[in-house]
Image (cartoon, rainbow, N blue to C red; front, top):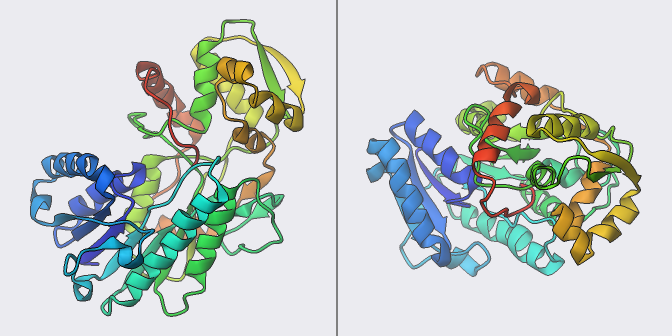
Length: 359
């Protein structure tokens, strides 16, 4: 790739991914589409990236627009489509509580608009799209890179609209696409750094706030796998595969091949936070109901939509992805090896506002 059009900047993945791509290849140029309301944050992020990679300043442009608008809301002549050789479509609404209308507008129609733009890029070599492992919906058992429509229904509109958006991409036979399906993205495996406190961080925050020997619910049997992946693994994998022609036409599972289970994670969290709780069983249905009650939410601070993932009985296979990444010497680190770094960063930044849900 030479000049790449990017959506979803300055998001959690986007900012880190562009830093690595600009650092890795000095011929790499970026045109990042930014919503006007996020322009200030994007300019700050761009300045930080250019301070880390000084040569990037002449290779990194911002343009204002919106994926939900026709022609992406781009001004006439703001992007020369014939110069675009790659598209990284990262923009989406990452929210388990999203309404169907908003999810359809951003995730599905937005993806359709980006693809319409891609069709006008006559020199396009790649279209890299970030989906989610949770297009698996309520499917139970193994779910591999080659799986897509397996008769699943969806636990929320986030899952459904990401599934429909991936379907839009997959139907484009003439588009040189690669689809990435991350698990639940957590902080950097080395520094623990994150700007996205969701998923397991809700559980950490709840445990940290509760006193010792306080009742803590055991939702389901605790044997459900929780697929957590560090942001640096996502970035390394995508940096390598966006430059690997073998990845075109492939679906990539950026997931942990050996994830811990709910009960193991809860034990690990409590241990590192120095907490001991009184465990009591709670059915998923009752947990969902209870988490909707304002007083309960104040105590446990977890959105009720998260309850479904305590009993999400699916294993994400990633053997095909592992083989593809092996030649780049990239593997997903084990959660137990880097968790101390996550918890240390969390303790030092736990007052920060929690935002978002899953990627």
